[in-house]
Image (cartoon, rainbow over all chains, first blue to last red; front, side):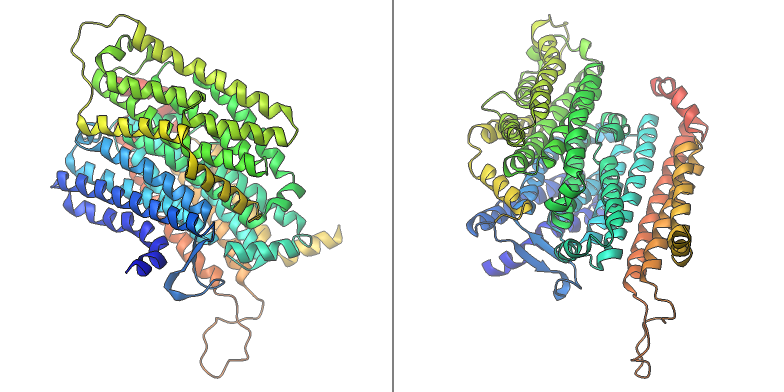
Length: 498
Length: 127
């Protein structure tokens, strides 16, 4: 039994949410059952992800390989759960549960009728399933299909509120994301045309032999991949869809969009860059310089744009643009410290940004006010919500003993290794900017007199979700232990120095 | 120069794909009508499909159907065509979804022009 679970683990972890997601629309009349099903699937997801991580750590990074339908590697679709895949699967699971808990009970207020709630959950689980698939798949065309599933469910989540702006933001997002997919598919096409393989391992081997025969095709494939995944993951000049989409979505949806969906595309980009093209080819084409430059521009520009926003959720959305910069910058450092820092930052930002969006959503739902200046005295009325907001803001800034610090510290060490001082300065400046756009919210919420009205913290499941996320931020920051080890192993796997 | 032109003529499906891709991209980016944007996206995707299918083609090859007599025949590579079947399905679902969103946009804003929708954005929302 145990062996059966272990061999089939990479599939179980993907199809559990997918199967349940298609049952949900039939249960649209029994919304309590739907909510409990989603939460139990998420708990199962955490159990499977933790088990997967423990197996990978026990095997010292040896990947679990599963061949779909029993067809072996170059012909069939291969799932490969190495340290990297397990790391992202863990990130998805630990963010997915609090977000599902937060949606319990008060979602129908945000999306309208109860039938819409069931459909919202269908999209949510489809997104979780597709992201887990992206984490584990080892096949390029499979990546494209999962990216499309994730994109359509993201757009569905954005449009789930009945407001006209939701349709507008969703349409804009759909158009730009589909342009991104077209570029990704084109990039996959170029790789397939010159290598004849869709399996990442085989394509990579073939590519390192023959790239000199087709240097321009490789160059085109690189740029198609960068632009395609860049649009989808909102790398700075390609971010224009993000602020609208993430600020009009319901609170739990913007948490999962900002926390996980953007990371999923970044993660696919990482896999394609390192597992298909490989670090040496990246250096030949100077792609690592482009990534570092794009990261630095994103950090500075995203932070400045975030400072200019007066709406809380829009400020958080622009902050995502800046934080994506850190992750992209880490991808371009091409050393173990930088990559491990980037991956750890990816996880920590997923947790922190979900906590921020959830607490912002709770505040907006209770007070009905979107602007930061209207939040005076909220800290005394909604202590749990504001405490979660404060902890996660401190975490995002990178205060020691909170999770953001460890990611940023490793990124700093990684940039010092490349002997280029500019990224170091930008990383530190980014933290200062981050404090500049988040701390005023805390100051207004705690130190300005509260108006006389009867505001309360949200319900129990929402409080549990916020507390869970805050605890995770503190635990990841104080005892990163095996998670950091997994990130280090994943970085070693990316650089092929096992 | 002559060599380059010869190469382009031999690889005409790829040149066609490139031209169609650029036409599609220009349509999406420069037109403000939502239907034209949607059509542009479909054109872009068609270009990618053409590229894929052309990459599996072998001149003079036949469809890979093995019936005992033709085991020596030259077959084209069926994999890219099969992949593009999936691609077409994805593209159809994106179009369907986009049309549903267009319907919602038209019902709330009364126009299909994105520039006008952007201008009147917040007034409709505050109602």
